[in-house]
Image 1 (cartoon, one colour):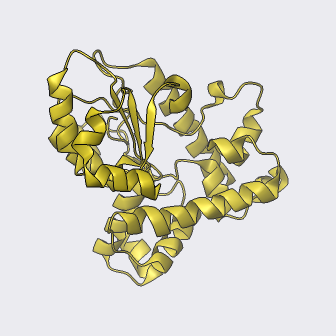
Image 2 (cartoon, rainbow, N blue to C red):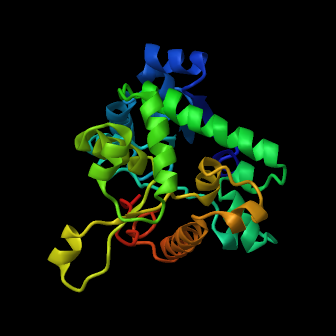
Length: 284
């Protein structure tokens, strides 16, 4: 999508060894001697670039859109970027597809397959299953390990399956911990990691009393119903009709559609980001 928006941009893929080595060896020379705009894909792999980008941006502050940073996982990276590039950067979160974005699709298909582009647009069940398996492995083995986040991969995988079984229920870290044989603090840490990757919204209850609303436990939903159904081993509409979590799956799907619609309609002035989402995601 970014390549189509910036067809003449120079692309550095920081997962490509040659691009990473080039930027690690002499980043200032490299970025000064390429034509802008510049796309830095998987920018989280080289956070040392952020202070340099600040200096380069300040030299020509009037020029907008010279650097486009693509990040596949959050994990507190926004705070580090904001500290280096405060006032010089806008954020845009890319959610899975909303219904209004998928021309001609049946609502039932989007609900079953989820909104990630490849499985959403692929009618083949085996291909969707393989994509979801690869996505989970990528998250566990590349994103977490690449950011030096130490977690047990087997425990994190079990945690995801438990989240799918508990989809739409009130969040109770202690109960999750008893089920997995883990401490309350470990469960909270796992939930924070999945939430920072935009895969686990925690939806607070509604109360007119602000203090009461902040104290009460939220409900948890996996962001994407396709991912949820993969964990529940649901691949067809018939299986979904018989699934005990069908109601909670539908509720989470509708919540996400509302959030995505509102985020696209209400954008604050002077920002490329969506509006603050209703009480469950950080502004991006």
